[in-house]
Amino acid sequence: MVMQKWNPLAEMREMEDAMNRVWRGFGRRPAETNGGERWHIPLDVVEDGDDIVVHASLPGAAPDQIEVNVEDGVLTIGAKTEDDKETKQGGYLLRERRSGSYHRALRLPDTVDEEKAESAYDRGVLTVTFPKQESKKARRLDIKVRQG
View 1 (cartoon, helix red, strand yellow):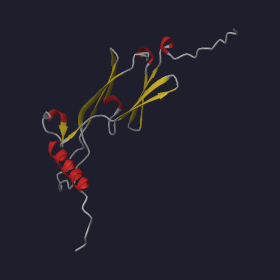
View 2 (view 1 turned 45 degrees about the horizontal axis):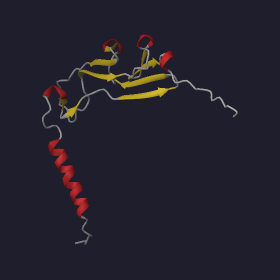
View 3 (view 1 turned 120 degrees about the vertical axis):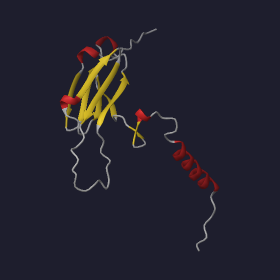
């Protein structure tokens, strides 16, 4: 038997982690879960110069099964993936890939020009680019020095 120094804080963290596992998912509606996890579209939002760029991961979604809408400052992305045809020979040993419909909504900053938005889909990643409105872009002010 190996002797170890007792660390009460480490035991408290372990207990907190255990309680978090117990409470995770408590009170969720069945539509929000899939296999015990929340199912949503992962996003990256980047400010690139004068553009706001949203990258959404949609693996397995065909371009004709993706819907992108912008209304009242909210970007909504929806997609549907088809279930693979199951074979009747054997059974799954592990099944983690998801299929079905899912969506994500994101409030946009008021500085973007929704009318000039562009979208592209490449290798499972949807990219939506919003240019900033000219009137809302930050501008540099020149400093005038007064002699006095």
